[in-house]
Picture 1 (tube, helix red, strand yellow):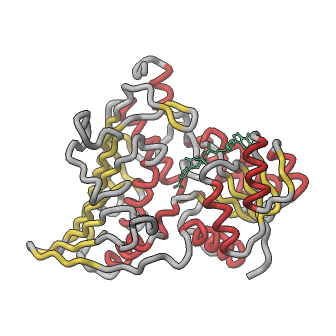
Picture 2 (tube, rainbow, N blue to C red):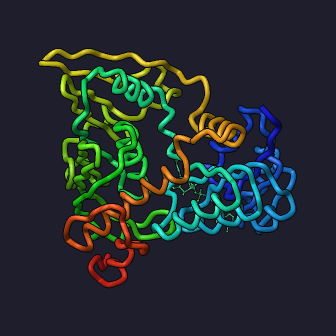
Picture 3 (tube, rainbow, N blue to C red):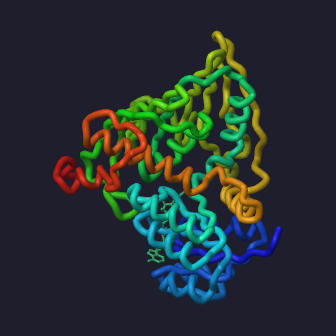
Length: 359
Ligand SMILES: NC(=O)c1ccc[n+]([C@@H]2O[C@H](COP(=O)([O-])OP(=O)(O)OC[C@H]3O[C@@H](n4cnc5c(N)ncnc54)[C@H](O)[C@@H]3O)[C@@H](O)[C@H]2O)c1
């Protein structure tokens, strides 16, 4: 591996995971940018960033880092990724959700294409072993040909966290192209996250061009007295999201996240295959040898050096953003949305502004 250095733009909570990942790969963090002096002091002390900037454009111009992590709120992802690409960085790790609308996502992909920068969007759960094992089992034919997937997300909103569930659904199905979808969302709250209004739950039925289909259900109030979507959600079993993958010869049940550490020293049984009433428990490798963001960065370097497609590429992030915007557009249109999605605004924010979801 050649020698690389990295810079982090946005030094808040999630930047810690990015910094630790670069450090675990022996990649020095040479600079950091944030509008908060406190965050910059933290980055200097904990990430070893010798140069700190309140203007990320100045960082890009003066330091010219090889790799850049964009770890700010999603409202800023587009302008920062485009600026990083135009400054000539080799690789960009951008946090999810990729963008606020498809116009932004397209600009990000196009800017990276023009500059030759490799872009990856942090749907890093892709690398967690239970999901990797699930993809392997499906590819090996453990449940026969897959027809249908049910995905349940406890995420409050389809854009902020549900983006991971959409990404996972599509990756479990082998990243097929979407044919059309129909969806409804709950926007009747003033729920905000990362500085913008968010939907608060919903349902989507997605049909893929390869004949598979998916049913997604998400929402904050997934349990308890206020239960609106899934009042009987079992938090002991499901963390973050859960999947039922229906194949011709069995159903793969995938419980979702597990974080090793603290009192969680033994991996939960996260994977089971149901065949005609029989249940087979499936083991997977645990704990992980490397963190998931470190694996994302490693693949980014592989993609820079060997032009290898990245499983979390900008185009892949665009496809996920297209489903999110398709869901919002279906709700605005009250009807089916055929792909590719042509609307370039954010239909949910448009409905908020026009009073359909007054908040
Ligand atoms: N992949 C995941 O699993 C995961 C998990 C948590 C958060 N995220 C995503 O990561 C992103 C950041 O989340 P977070 O929890 O770190 O947020 P945060 O608010 O803790 O940190 C964001 C940082 O960006 C800084 N910032 C704001 N404007 C800036 C500017 N113009 N230039 C430079 N810095 C600026 C803020 O001062 C803050 O320190 C969000 O998009 C979020 O959705 C992803």
